[in-house]
Length: 304
Ligand code: NAD
Picture (cartoon, rainbow, N blue to C red):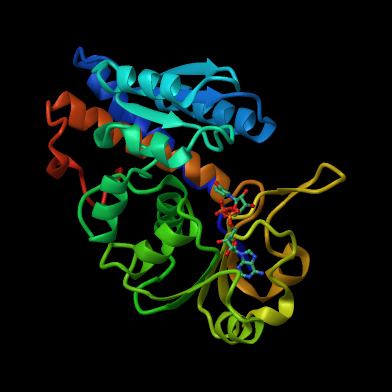
């Protein structure tokens, strides 16, 4: 078993970005800029936002964290988003999810200007990605692809099983792995909560690659997988003893895997790195005055 080390891969990607940013800055241009909106107090969100801001520093980006109280109305939040959309000095905007229950998160996602939508959740970006067009790709799914690419894991022609169909992870990764992308061309099964257990087992037991994003500790057990499977564990679950674990029973399953992501230090790190790639793309589009021109989005982005 070998580890798909998200920390090593993310650090390498971010170092490549920092090098590219240094060239821009040395030629007199401003730094890329990311704006993060955080509404209310939510411990996991605090920690995700902290790691995004920290990664901006490593990448040579500037960033702004805008905090709003839990009580902010949806219309006030939308007004703030509209203001940031109109500010050409910031390249990318994230609204950290979840937002409080009285705010409709889809309205928030839809309000972000697509060229600034570095999370890739806006219907324009999601739709373009689905159609195989140039777009910002949802960061966790994109991060998984970059991790597979970094470790040169063959994907083309493989049988992948994705478990979980959330808009932010399961759905986009199932589309990306099956699309005609550089990391793609797999045959993908998407399983979810309504998938009968027997069917799920049939699928996972013959899968070459499993991506699990269900949020249940120990969901993937040894008997569910074949020898040599590549296991991508997206889950982030905090146990009562404070320990952070994924959705895979790592202790018993890892021995059967050819490759497996650790939790922490796997997909989570890659999500942040992918966000940095998307921000650099947004900056380059912005610099080249291609804003509003979605055709300017780069495809198959890679760093030397
Ligand atoms: P979610 O929590 O919105 O939904 C869970 C999904 O799991 C649903 O689609 C549901 O159909 C499926 N599911 C639940 N029980 C199932 C079962 N018994 N059999 C098959 N499918 C089942 O999904 P999410 O937001 O993608 O989050 C999933 C996990 O991934 C969570 O632990 C979350 O914290 C983590 N996550 C990690 C990252 C990262 O960067 N590593 C990013 C996003 C989410």
